[in-house]
Amino acid sequence: MSVAFELEFEACRPRLYVLPDQPARLAPSPRVRRRRMVAGVVVAVAVVVLLVLLALPIRALGGSTLAQAAPAQGQEYVVKAGDTLASIADRADPAHGAALTERLTRQVGSPVVVPGEHIFIP
Image 1 (cartoon, rainbow, N blue to C red):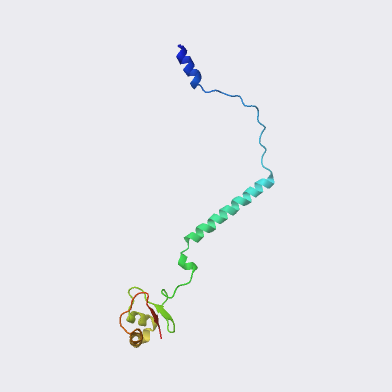
Image 2: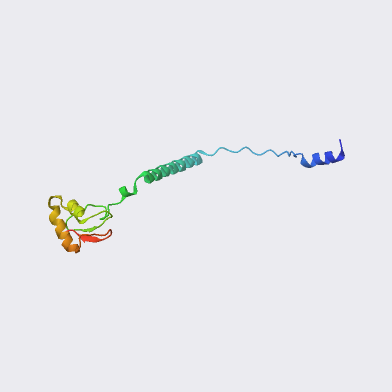
């Protein structure tokens, strides 16, 4: 064996150290185990509640806005895309849709409505 190989072996060889005896870890007391278990249950319940809330549709938690509700007499209706005076009148009063369409046309001043426009349903 050459001297260079021996020096290289000495530099790369892992050194083993003897550690002094360490005292054995004591098992946690029943009180600590109980606290850890309660904390784990609380975290698990919080995660389940969060997942359930995320699974619910947001619309189910809140009420509907006037733009989503069917028009009713005596309220202000916000026109949505695709609405016409006739369709609004038919949803507000199906029995007298034609007469309500005439009144809405006179009120608005035009047979054309624009999305976002506010119309009072008489």
